[in-house]
Length: 311
Image (cartoon, rainbow, N blue to C red; front, side, top):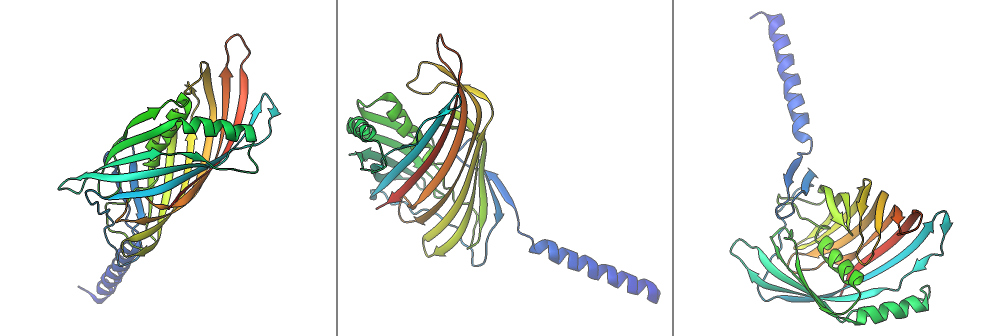
């Protein structure tokens, strides 16, 4: 082998080695379907810095935890070009009693969540008549209990819920839908991660409030100390044109457009069941309401929502 060929061959090996080194430094993308959540995918785009570890909930049979979920919403509607005043609803405070009823050998736990003694707080910006009406309706709810199976990563099966009381059907269905969707907010990767890890949870067709939406949540592990993790999230939802029928209504509705986005910050203790933190979202939905014996009405609804989990 002559000298000129040896120099060329050595240079080629050096370039090849450097290119391999560069590729290995790029974040490894891991993507998989989420167990118990048909249609949901989790994609890890960055496993974060070392040291990395597998984050898992440590369920203990008989463990009970009480936390509060505080929900507040502002709504403004425009019908056929006429905008109504902003409606600011008072905070609805829902104590949640969560109990681990059973833990299997594989770490999967059967957990019961029970909501009772719902109260409506005062708000100087809320209409007094609305506050009184909500207090009356929520006082009619004796309890709402939901049971699901949760694996160590926090993903759950579809909840089975029971209602006790005589509140308006739309309020019961709203809470039921909220309880079901709350299980879509935080999923922990089933691979070791460290601070700075990022992952995406997505579904092309998730049902939310009776509307089929495309869902995506981008989450980042911003802090990890022992069994306590702090996770930031950014949420987006969109929906294609579709026909729907909302609970408690006797008319048809066509969704023309739906766009929502939000942010959240949650602190998770893997020895507990519910997080501490809050989530904010904004949504705009354009609908065509088809009332009997009337012209179609175009309604644009803008909603701002805040949900807090607190002790």
